[in-house]
Length: 245
Ligand SMILES: NC(=O)c1ccc[n+]([C@@H]2O[C@H](COP(=O)([O-])OP(=O)(O)OC[C@H]3O[C@@H](n4cnc5c(N)ncnc54)[C@H](OP(=O)(O)O)[C@@H]3O)[C@@H](O)[C@H]2O)c1
Image (cartoon, rainbow, N blue to C red; front, side, top):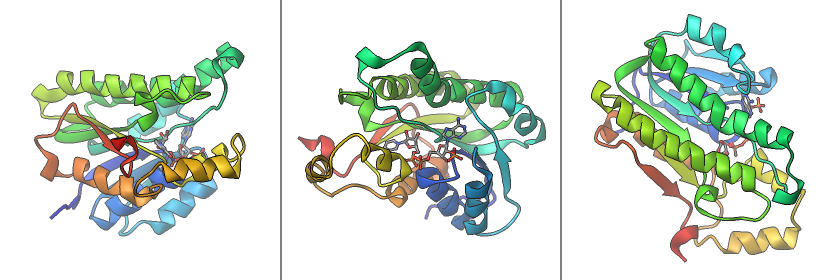
């Protein structure tokens, strides 16, 4: 039986999509949540959907490390952290500029490095704790127009492995998950750059169709729980069979 009873769990990017579902499911399994996002209204909507009480919200733009001060000073040690916040940018390499490169990496990679480091330095990770980094199946592919997103997620999966080896002696586990396409606000952005016909063709490549946020949340509950106590340094693909071919 998976339970997160009384575990103190931090989830970034919990104001929508996969992060919102992770927070909801974790609360239903008994966890106390601290949730982060930029949009206060959407974050409060998530808070209202959580089971139980005692949850906290922080409105933080994670792309600037200076914004983490109050979270770090007010937190008590976490049993689990889900590094889920992310942005996508569709642009062929030819059209990239320094600003685009830096902005995608600032949220998808740098912020996760800095947050995990601050949690470690301030002793905010409990022994037996579990860190989960939300990467992407893109990190293993070469989809045109996704260079910065893909590179930032590949960097994140690699970072998770190194951190796993550095934290194993403290009994803290680190794993990443690499989802295929999940229907969220992020995938709606793709509708602006590809036709309906192409989107339908892309979904047909998924033997089980596109995923839903609860599919990823379920896997992450396993990684946050003590049932996965021997799992560390792994990158788990969850893609409805997309990479079978
Ligand atoms: N959907 C997919 O097909 C898919 C597939 C593989 C991996 N992923 C990954 O899954 C994660 C969640 O994506 P999603 O599909 O659920 O997208 P989403 O609905 O757009 O959610 C993204 C979340 O990240 C937050 N966020 C973005 N930039 C932030 C920043 N600078 N500071 C704080 N929060 C920030 C957003 O907060 P606000 O809304 O408050 O700004 C939102 O809560 C991402 O890391 C994404 O790369 C998604």
